[in-house]
Image (cartoon, rainbow, N blue to C red; front, side, top):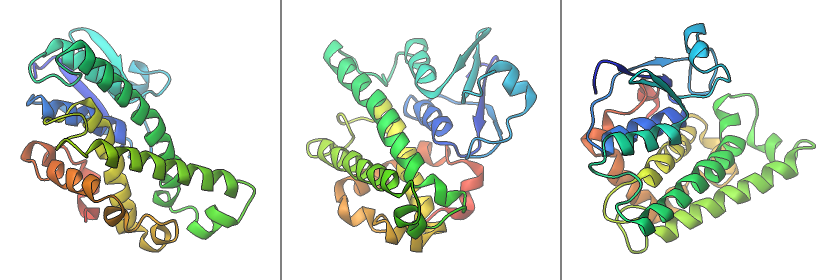
Length: 233
């Protein structure tokens, strides 16, 4: 990318990783700075000046500031239309936008509610499932997560990627969330076993194969956040 295009990314946060995958799928170089951590904490003042609400990631491009993963992916697709992230036809664009927004919201929220608490190491699975007034809410979120994973498994019935033969914005928003599951299994195997996700790969084999296909691509390999390397499975 030109020198006047700079990314600011939370180190390991799914949203920033989604943007890096967009660059990878479009075979574009990227340059940027990792700030804070993958739980979204500790944003420096200079980044908050660019994004007062703390929305991450942030792209400075051509004198503009673009905030948030999906807006950045959309900007990339218009700026560099080769290898489209949002489809080459009207029907394809409608499908990909629908799935991208849906999974970014619903899969992202389900993972945030069910998996992120273990990464913060502030609780246990037993406590989350049964130990307090929010246990029912947690079990509902866990059911939501399994429904999202089931929908993804169904999408892979006919395609090697989620909407066709090539990865799109849908693949970009989903992959980091599954990597988050993998990270949680490595860091908290007992908790993930208790909530039924330690063996998510055997429950969703097509989804597991899809993730393996993406993670072994050299362009995707280079997007892995620095602070995840020691915990990769």
